Image: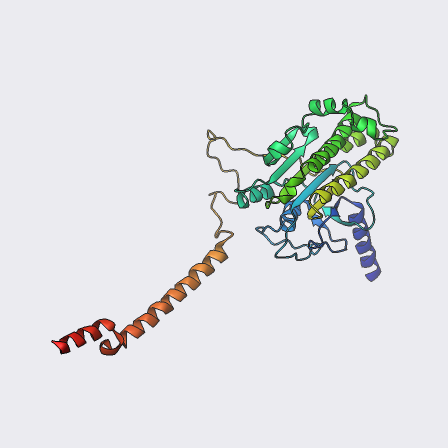
Length: 352
């Protein structure tokens, strides 16, 4: 029985290692990722990014891979790249990598909102981009720094035809510039190179006190797998080009921010559910959509409840003690000796 349990445990660990993964390409010295094979859920990736940037989260992240960081230092930037179509890339062995379980779609909208709320007076760079789906969100200095960045597929294909594009600088080997799947993959690689070039051009971004956030989702490799398969030379060349491009991107980001940036790569073969963004209309009728909470009740207490409670409690205690001390001293005060008013009046009566 013990042998069977050990075999099952080893098989489970092996499957975790061979599955989807989270890889940390770059991190400052004060952001420590422990060596190990602790799996992390896909829905916890935004919380992990928030913690690496020094932000608080609503629920504790019960994951031993990230050690407690410094209270006086925080990264100047965080870049997260999601690669769809394969479970892992051939990065160097000395880079921290962790299995990814429950690979559900996620966004960094909560982290972007935190940056916007805490640093509203500054000009942080927030860039969220998915070239294949033409999804783009920019905030702060990103509107001026990346205003010339090609984001639509038509713009990126126009960029590929210009001088200095990846079509002329990279060895394509089996990849073709006349195939739609190949062009989609190469266009995403071109976006990585263009973002790196713009960051090298605007190195003053690292001097801003507000942290910057970059989120990229690449699906071109998924199209390569769908068209050619994982045993094809096109897939081999594409993974080689993408691995090199991601390492260069990580080096450029770390260089711009003086090694004060965190760069993570999430490789997911397939997401378990499609990513949908729900919106509400002002004309929407009131319908009960949550059977677990049919009356749409609020939470019992807010996230800052403990902080507000302690502030109010100890302030009331201090005020109550102050009133007691002042009342006691007034009650036992001798007007003839302790009060200057009665003392002056007494002297004036004696003079008269």
